[in-house]
Image (cartoon, rainbow, N blue to C red; front, side, top):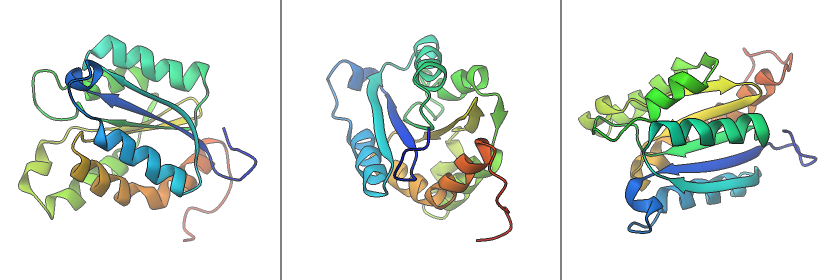
Length: 169
Protein backbone atom coordinates (compact mmCIF):
# COMPACT_ATOMS: atom_id res chain seq x y z
CA UNK A 1 0.00 0.00 0.00
CA UNK A 2 1.24 3.48 -0.85
CA UNK A 3 1.41 5.74 2.18
CA UNK A 4 0.55 9.43 2.43
CA UNK A 5 4.26 10.24 2.27
CA UNK A 6 4.47 8.75 -1.24
CA UNK A 7 6.57 5.74 -0.28
CA UNK A 8 5.38 2.19 0.10
CA UNK A 9 4.99 -0.17 3.04
CA UNK A 10 7.57 -2.90 3.57
CA UNK A 11 8.25 -6.00 5.59
CA UNK A 12 11.42 -7.98 6.21
CA UNK A 13 11.40 -11.75 6.55
CA UNK A 14 14.63 -13.39 7.70
CA UNK A 15 14.88 -17.10 6.94
CA UNK A 16 17.27 -18.74 9.36
CA UNK A 17 17.00 -21.82 11.53
CA UNK A 18 19.64 -20.51 13.94
CA UNK A 19 18.20 -17.01 13.90
CA UNK A 20 14.70 -18.27 14.65
CA UNK A 21 16.08 -20.11 17.69
CA UNK A 22 17.96 -17.03 18.91
CA UNK A 23 21.35 -18.59 18.21
CA UNK A 24 22.44 -16.00 15.61
CA UNK A 25 22.00 -12.24 15.38
CA UNK A 26 20.08 -11.10 12.33
CA UNK A 27 22.40 -8.45 10.92
CA UNK A 28 21.09 -8.61 7.34
CA UNK A 29 17.43 -8.19 8.33
CA UNK A 30 18.34 -5.26 10.59
CA UNK A 31 20.33 -3.63 7.77
CA UNK A 32 17.47 -4.03 5.26
CA UNK A 33 15.00 -2.49 7.71
CA UNK A 34 17.27 0.47 8.47
CA UNK A 35 18.10 1.07 4.79
CA UNK A 36 14.47 1.06 3.66
CA UNK A 37 13.41 3.31 6.54
CA UNK A 38 16.19 5.75 5.60
CA UNK A 39 14.91 5.70 2.01
CA UNK A 40 11.43 6.70 3.19
CA UNK A 41 9.59 3.37 3.08
CA UNK A 42 7.03 2.72 5.82
CA UNK A 43 7.91 -0.22 8.09
CA UNK A 44 5.09 -2.71 8.68
CA UNK A 45 6.48 -6.15 9.61
CA UNK A 46 9.60 -8.05 10.60
CA UNK A 47 10.10 -11.64 11.62
CA UNK A 48 12.69 -14.37 11.73
CA UNK A 49 11.43 -17.79 10.75
CA UNK A 50 13.06 -21.19 10.22
CA UNK A 51 14.12 -22.45 6.79
CA UNK A 52 11.00 -24.54 6.28
CA UNK A 53 9.14 -24.33 3.00
CA UNK A 54 5.58 -24.31 4.36
CA UNK A 55 6.39 -21.72 7.04
CA UNK A 56 7.94 -19.49 4.37
CA UNK A 57 4.89 -19.92 2.11
CA UNK A 58 2.46 -19.17 4.94
CA UNK A 59 4.47 -16.12 6.05
CA UNK A 60 4.66 -14.64 2.54
CA UNK A 61 0.92 -15.16 2.01
CA UNK A 62 0.20 -13.50 5.35
CA UNK A 63 2.32 -10.45 4.42
CA UNK A 64 0.92 -10.10 0.90
CA UNK A 65 -2.71 -11.22 1.04
CA UNK A 66 -3.70 -10.36 4.59
CA UNK A 67 -1.43 -7.47 5.62
CA UNK A 68 -1.30 -6.05 2.07
CA UNK A 69 2.34 -5.00 2.40
CA UNK A 70 3.71 -3.53 -0.83
CA UNK A 71 7.32 -4.71 -0.58
CA UNK A 72 8.56 -7.84 1.13
CA UNK A 73 12.29 -8.43 1.31
CA UNK A 74 13.47 -11.84 2.40
CA UNK A 75 17.01 -12.59 3.45
CA UNK A 76 18.48 -16.08 3.59
CA UNK A 77 17.71 -19.50 2.19
CA UNK A 78 18.71 -18.76 -1.41
CA UNK A 79 21.81 -20.94 -1.74
CA UNK A 80 22.39 -24.63 -2.39
CA UNK A 81 22.43 -26.01 1.15
CA UNK A 82 19.86 -28.72 1.89
CA UNK A 83 17.88 -26.28 4.06
CA UNK A 84 17.84 -23.49 1.43
CA UNK A 85 14.24 -23.67 0.21
CA UNK A 86 13.30 -20.02 -0.33
CA UNK A 87 13.19 -20.34 -4.16
CA UNK A 88 10.94 -23.40 -3.91
CA UNK A 89 8.59 -21.54 -1.58
CA UNK A 90 8.59 -18.55 -3.94
CA UNK A 91 7.50 -20.77 -6.84
CA UNK A 92 4.35 -21.60 -4.91
CA UNK A 93 3.65 -18.02 -3.82
CA UNK A 94 4.37 -15.67 -6.69
CA UNK A 95 2.01 -15.11 -9.60
CA UNK A 96 4.58 -13.41 -11.86
CA UNK A 97 8.34 -13.75 -11.75
CA UNK A 98 10.62 -10.79 -12.48
CA UNK A 99 13.79 -12.59 -13.59
CA UNK A 100 15.60 -9.42 -14.65
CA UNK A 101 15.88 -8.17 -11.08
CA UNK A 102 17.29 -11.47 -9.81
CA UNK A 103 19.65 -11.68 -12.80
CA UNK A 104 20.88 -8.13 -12.15
CA UNK A 105 21.67 -8.98 -8.54
CA UNK A 106 23.59 -12.11 -9.56
CA UNK A 107 25.45 -10.26 -12.32
CA UNK A 108 26.58 -7.52 -9.95
CA UNK A 109 27.59 -10.07 -7.32
CA UNK A 110 29.60 -12.07 -9.85
CA UNK A 111 31.86 -9.05 -10.27
CA UNK A 112 32.80 -9.53 -6.60
CA UNK A 113 32.76 -13.32 -6.12
CA UNK A 114 32.35 -16.41 -8.27
CA UNK A 115 30.17 -17.89 -5.53
CA UNK A 116 27.36 -15.56 -6.61
CA UNK A 117 26.47 -18.08 -9.30
CA UNK A 118 25.21 -20.35 -6.49
CA UNK A 119 22.50 -17.86 -5.53
CA UNK A 120 19.01 -19.04 -6.47
CA UNK A 121 17.07 -16.04 -5.20
CA UNK A 122 13.94 -14.93 -7.06
CA UNK A 123 11.92 -11.76 -7.42
CA UNK A 124 8.22 -11.85 -8.08
CA UNK A 125 4.76 -10.40 -7.68
CA UNK A 126 1.83 -11.68 -5.67
CA UNK A 127 -1.27 -9.55 -5.92
CA UNK A 128 -0.11 -5.98 -5.36
CA UNK A 129 3.10 -6.97 -3.56
CA UNK A 130 6.68 -7.22 -4.76
CA UNK A 131 8.76 -9.95 -3.09
CA UNK A 132 12.56 -9.86 -3.38
CA UNK A 133 14.85 -12.64 -2.12
CA UNK A 134 18.26 -11.51 -0.89
CA UNK A 135 21.11 -13.71 0.33
CA UNK A 136 21.50 -14.18 4.07
CA UNK A 137 24.92 -12.65 4.68
CA UNK A 138 25.01 -8.97 5.56
CA UNK A 139 27.58 -8.21 2.85
CA UNK A 140 25.64 -9.96 0.09
CA UNK A 141 22.27 -8.60 1.24
CA UNK A 142 23.64 -5.05 1.22
CA UNK A 143 25.23 -5.43 -2.21
CA UNK A 144 22.14 -7.02 -3.74
CA UNK A 145 19.71 -4.50 -2.26
CA UNK A 146 21.79 -1.65 -3.70
CA UNK A 147 21.36 -3.19 -7.18
CA UNK A 148 17.55 -3.32 -7.12
CA UNK A 149 16.76 -0.33 -4.90
CA UNK A 150 16.74 2.18 -7.79
CA UNK A 151 13.87 0.36 -9.56
CA UNK A 152 11.69 -0.71 -6.63
CA UNK A 153 9.49 2.41 -6.61
CA UNK A 154 8.86 2.14 -10.34
CA UNK A 155 8.14 -1.59 -10.08
CA UNK A 156 5.61 -0.97 -7.30
CA UNK A 157 4.02 1.86 -9.26
CA UNK A 158 3.56 -0.46 -12.26
CA UNK A 159 2.30 -3.36 -10.11
CA UNK A 160 -0.38 -1.02 -8.76
CA UNK A 161 -1.47 -0.11 -12.28
CA UNK A 162 0.54 3.06 -12.82
CA UNK A 163 0.72 4.23 -16.41
CA UNK A 164 4.08 6.04 -16.23
CA UNK A 165 6.52 5.41 -19.05
CA UNK A 166 9.11 2.71 -18.32
CA UNK A 167 11.55 4.21 -20.82
CA UNK A 168 12.08 7.41 -18.84
CA UNK A 169 14.66 7.53 -16.06
